[in-house]
Image (cartoon, rainbow over all chains, first blue to last red; front, side, top):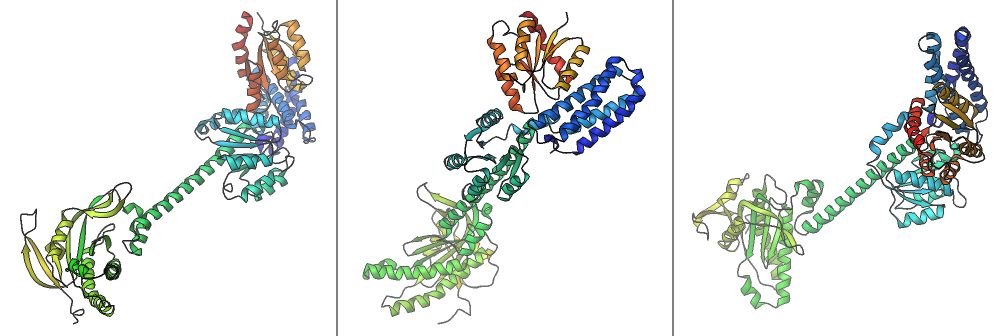
Length: 484
Length: 126
């Protein structure tokens, strides 16, 4: 705390320099003019004044008095230096050492650091609550802080401070330690017990050199401290540091909230359609998710129950719903098990995507395996249906691979993640070519397959809107799954 | 013409040092150690520039300055506040009390001379 003139390292330097000067003055005094000799005597005797002050550090205005003595020393030393010029080099060197020693006492005071302190502070301002029971101190702080560009709130007691903190967003608190009623450390304790105030930076200000009080405040959670009368530069620096901490904390908080919102959004958007694993992947790397809509290659799977409309007509609505929901439930599980995204249920039809929102190298393979597993599962579904006295059903699946636009489709009020594009329509055409129990894949899907599958017959189909006929292949169940 | 400076400072060492320095710099210097004496001297002597410490006994610098401004016979007196420590508040208060300029202690002498010379022509005109 050299700036507050409490450090004693500088006093040693000053006294040493003065002793040197005294020795030097004996050699030089006969070469000095009367006035200069007087100046020198006064300079040396001001050392005695300083010594007297140092034995009464508890005196009122002590700092002020010390500054005055140092100011006088500096003045005499400068005066002598101007006068003697280069005539007495030894005396000159000695005077310069005195000046240096005096300057070391006031380092951190106003002049030496002023230019540095005003550099970056202007940009970092905030709302500061100054708590002090002295109206004068509040007034000083308010003026000073306002001039520095801060917004200032004032409280004259701990209770008022806490009330203000409840009502106003504050970036930093300057807290007087000793106040009647609730004192500073009690205010601090209450702030730290308060969920929303806990992170608020607090700079404790003590009127006395009360280190114990300061230490207990820092233990209670104060970020920084100052002794009165504090110097402007130091106050500025500590406020700045406090505001920076607050800013980082706020940013962290915002970022965390943003992440939470993203997570909620992703879960709400995808949770129903994709597997937990995909949701987890998205949450891990949300930047990989472009919801604005992007063109990407996907493998599209579309399934449909044969003659479902006519089955419906013969069944009571409750049974239709029961059967359909059971079927869709089983199919959803299988699709999600293969990390597919269910885009849509269109009545009894299912549109699922492999490769959106996250692409993988084996999108086509997973889609095809998924289709086979879905067909396989029909055995179980029909067994359940039989047991429930419901009709057996059969399903056809079309699989196609191509570029689609994936993204959030809809309006502000109602939107969902999905895919659109020519290849979605083509998949529907392919699926319409299937019979019950059949899986048909396009040539583009076949090209992408890495695993080995049993391919049956192929044929060309004309698709509306495409001149060239499309080559499609029948996909047969693997041997292992080829049970009766 | 020699500028006449009233130095108001209660600290003896400082008062003595500054008055010697100013005299050496060819100013006519007279001194006061409190605000009340300072006011009296300003009324009687009409100094060109007043160097006014703020923490003065009997009448502090701020009050002294305000009273100078309120007295039409001496209201135009050029006053430079000598503010204690590095407190910005002191300076603001000094300027608000009507001081024309300020110098922070420990005084930087060349800067103080500059301030005096800046204000002196103004003082001569009034």
